[in-house]
Image 1 (cartoon, rainbow, N blue to C red):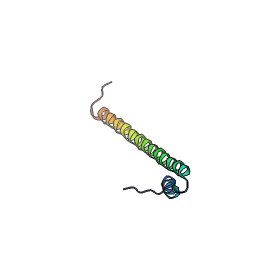
Image 2 (image 1 turned 30 degrees about the vertical axis):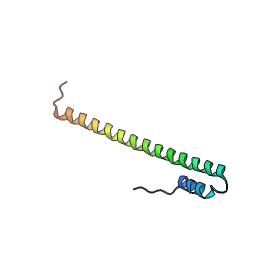
Image 3 (image 1 turned 30 degrees about the horizontal axis):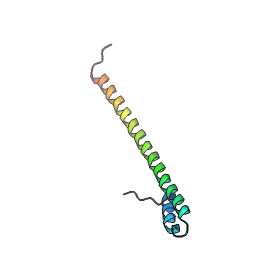
Image 4 (image 1 turned 60 degrees about the vertical axis):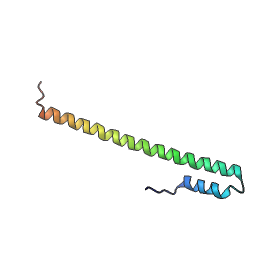
Length: 75
């Protein structure tokens, strides 16, 4: 399990502690924390998808090269 303690988590904890003093400020902090973690997750997911796409493309190129090499491609 990948446990992170970054700014979004700190904002959510801050929202929990400040709730009794200022509801509005607590909600703003909570929303910023959730949206920050959501943006980070989307960026990480996009990066992983791009890596998988590049690996897939390299495997396809390698398989094509082997087909051409051992398949006796005729001109």
